[in-house]
Length: 178
Image (cartoon, rainbow, N blue to C red; front, top):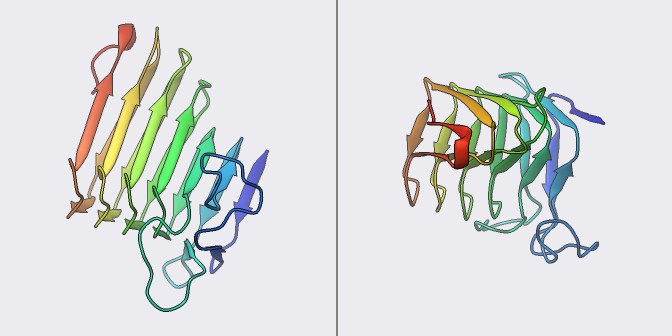
């Protein structure tokens, strides 16, 4: 399954509400993609993921974006979630590519990348601002067996996050993070 979001789109999630009572949070709306999410805006027409609350906005008004598969995000803004982006890679073809975007004002981590199930996952985050999140700016974790996570982070601004700017972790025989 591939979900493509067009340039200039605003995806506004109901604040503090989840009519389905499912997903990672039974009380907050979220975007869950089991497959590939392609959200490529342009500098003139970025894509916005946020809460639908008017007036004062608060961290944690919606859950965030979870992708079980691959993510292609360019010229996009993700803000006011419980977390910004959570990517779970468990297939060798899974990739995470975030470019020219802003991940800000989330309650937890800005970007959370997890590789597991002996997959070889590639993650690239470049020319992106990750700021004012209460958790880690970018968290990268590889777990179990022969799992590998090849992470390239370059030309990013990672500032004013509540915990570490970048966190790398490898567990089991998955080797050292590079």
